[in-house]
Amino acid sequence: MPHSSGGGSHGGGSHGGHSFSHSSSHSGSGGSSHRVYDHYVPGTNRYVYYKAGQPHYYYSDRKYKSEKSPVPFLIIFMAIWIAISIPFYIMIFHVPKKLVMDYNSEVIIEDGIDVLTSGEETELYEDLTTFRDKTGITPAIITVDNREWKGYYNDLENYAYDRYVNMFPDEKHWLIVYSSDLATGFEDWYFEGMQGNDTDDILTEKLTDEFNEIVNKCLTARTRYSVKEAFTEGFNYVSENGMKTSADPELLLFMILHSSIGLGIPLAMLILFLNQKKDPDEKLKENATLCPSATDALMEDTCDYCNGVYIHGIHTSCPHCGAAIKAKSRTIGYKLNE
Image (cartoon, rainbow, N blue to C red; front, side, top):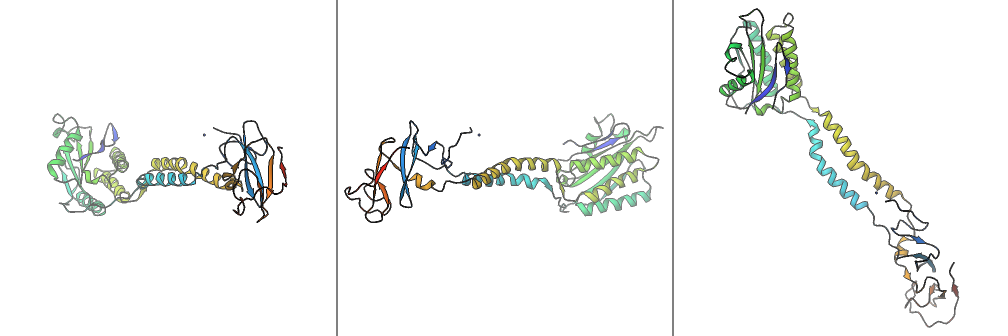
């Protein structure tokens, strides 16, 4: 159904239409979620891992486990955020499309109170035709006496609605009703617009508010503008600006803030994670072997096959080459607690 595009009056001016916990770290922790030490601390266990043929030890309350990478989660989160945001990004830009003129598109001017000369009607008709050809919206202007609606309708808007539905079977017209009382010394004029629903993509609230403001100012300055010139100014403005691509500044600002939170923070976390110093022995520590005691001396021996040093009593095969460990033949030394 059609709805008001707003209007104005001599005494009232123009009006619009309705319609994270921080944890301390220790050298060698490698980003793990628990404390890892290079010396014995009460309550910890001793673990051994091997590197370059030599045993290395660390102490912790449980086996070292590297922190899971947040990269996959952050990437998925940002991808979902972008996907959800796409419709809003599209909504920022308003790209009007001309209406298909598959209806009776004859421009109508009905000057019921003779406020237009014949020459003005001809010029106004040309202006309205230009507007129609650019937008696909057919305009109609009718002028009536105030007595035609006052006392019968609550306001001019109701009268304009009634006239629209009786004149047009479609939603592609823009009807402007101009009303005045020329019988008195004081010209008590009003105007009201009624637009079909199909026109909303072009006749936006912002655009029709500008139209109403222009027409109202011109009609108020009657010594400089005639009725015809007032509507010409308004329609020319809409013809020039109605089909332009525009951006919603409020939605644009919202999406900038939206992107800063939803993408900026995860991206900063991702960069910080990728740039943080990693423990080069991280994977070796994850595969470490638990020693029987965290405080007793350990017996080290050398593999007969690869000469790699290993700890007796906790392996069934050489942790370096995989060869079977023979019965203890010689002791290289003891690894005492530091």
